[in-house]
Length: 232
Image (cartoon, rainbow, N blue to C red; front, side, top):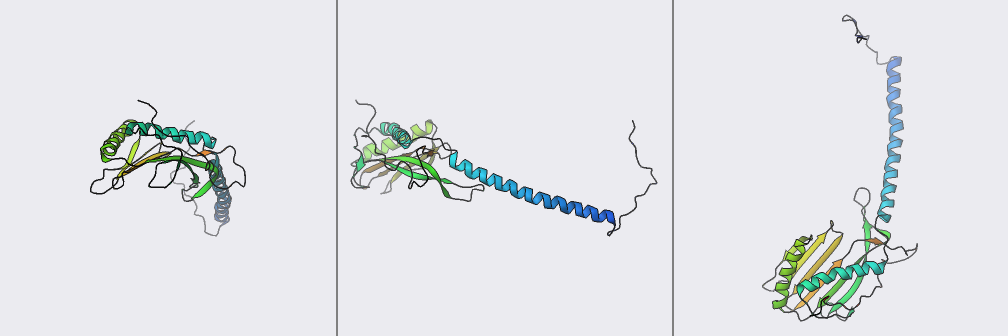
């Protein structure tokens, strides 16, 4: 059936500003606005609540001892690549001076719907393993760090900072992967021949966490002795 068109000489009567039809149209727009605004507010509220809920549960539910073990194992490969042969007992006597082999636990944070918040997530934690050696000469530290730098790059780690010291400056290597979910860092202090390493694994949610618990989960973990995985 052909489309119907208005005659060429047809005219449309203008609508007076105060006419009944113009008033009704105005009321119609106003009603739509009044309905849309509350609906939009509800959507924003639902999205915000959903984000908060996601922020508290999106980490895997893993016990602190298992995440501590993962951090410990993450340190093992660099230690072998660096070529160190000593075994380090758990604990630290004098931070920055003596050998170290410790676990630490930190909070995980929720940045909120717009990425503007910075609040801790109840029950979520992040485990790290730190180790240190004293009496590490330049002949071992320099070649070891250069070798480790290349090895980790070749194995999927992103180097966020690398500095070769000299003239009294420290040697530093910082890396990450999975958008910063995993971190590693290494520093050698030539003035005191002191070498440190740290490995941090992704956030996890403590399945044993209960309302009212204080401090990050896993802050009482103790590592086993740390040393080379291969015995020559």
